[in-house]
Length: 200
Image (cartoon, rainbow, N blue to C red; front, side, top):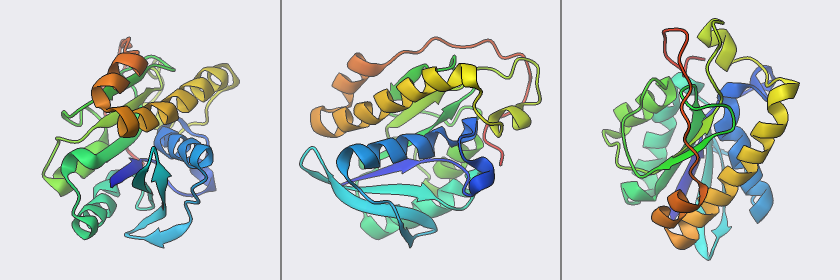
């Protein structure tokens, strides 16, 4: 079994914002595989299904970004799956808009949602899929990440969201090494402001 978590902020206020890339990828994945993510459990909207012959639980934490780890700790404690069978999807200021980066493990970087996940799980050895949203270009980073995707960004990000959903499918069916080789694009942006991505 795999737990696939998309990070974001709940509520209409945050729909289609840069900080909700994790939610958007999870929605795309659910649509591709006919999974309904509607059951409120473990402080999250969840949905069970099958991808590539493997049982999966799709998870959208409803705690707001900075407390995402509280939800995922409950999920992992309940299902007791190996840490490498958790896949977390989230936005990344340090990758250019539309870039896709898959990694087997690692630090949270500047993302507060991931900081919460790693703190609560006391583990960082799980795969993650990062969606580039680009640097803020001098704007306040909190306003930028919680801002709605512009028309100029929409097409690029829509394609990346679709590719990210396919990448998660590939991780489950063929393994993370193949998925990394097939889907990774990783050009970094230049940070123009200090601060951390991930606040709600």
